[in-house]
Length: 147
Image (tube, rainbow, N blue to C red; front, side):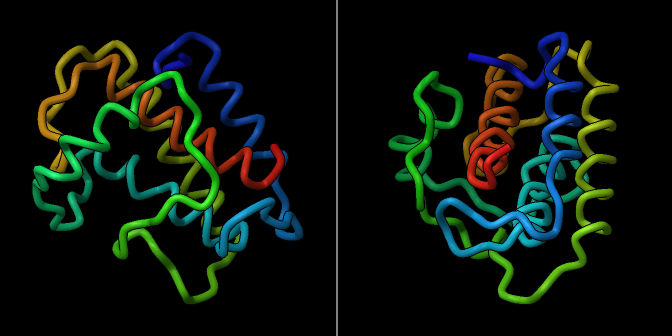
């Protein structure tokens, strides 16, 4: 599976995010494209240690969902979203795209780092697990909007 930290992934993600426009419609789910861009910032804020959103360890989620975060199997459409990453209010497309691109750029500057803080819900993750999880989440939502 592709990892955020693989060579070329940064350019691919930037290209795909740049291909979005405010008129893109979701192929599934309830978020509009600006809300999706806002939503995708959350996991990046977690890995960059900007915000843990007061998430707490959950043995049920950790036991049954952790491995799906970084497995090779694509996530199914319409998975539930935890409330802290849901937005019912409208967002500014260009502002949210810029923030997401900035976070992707920032994470790319850490591509050679080998140690990371534990995830607030899933606990200790290796660099490979963090990289796969970040790519998988972004890829899922970019596919949701057809890019």
